[in-house]
Length: 87
Image (cartoon, rainbow, N blue to C red; front, side, top):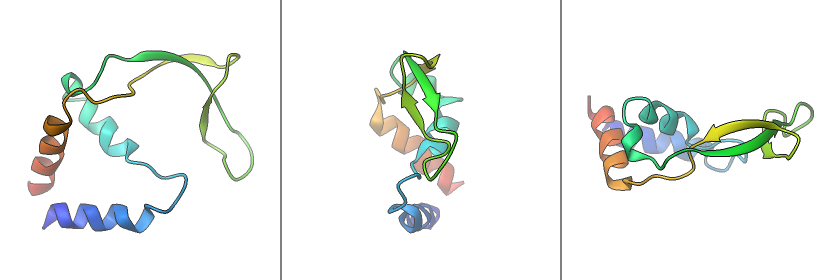
């Protein structure tokens, strides 16, 4: 039932251009960094005005930030997420 609730909750905002699964991914990285690839360093800036305010974009003049871009164990990731929803 919790997995279904989570799916329905994400489905509500799936069409929103600004929304992604970043919050779940971030909270899973903290206890299980082994599920993710090593961080890559990117130079990023933030849009500070208008509709896209808060959006990150690559920028040679931006701040260097370590970013995790890939899962190395997708099965482990989804297993962990669904286990948490079942709690």
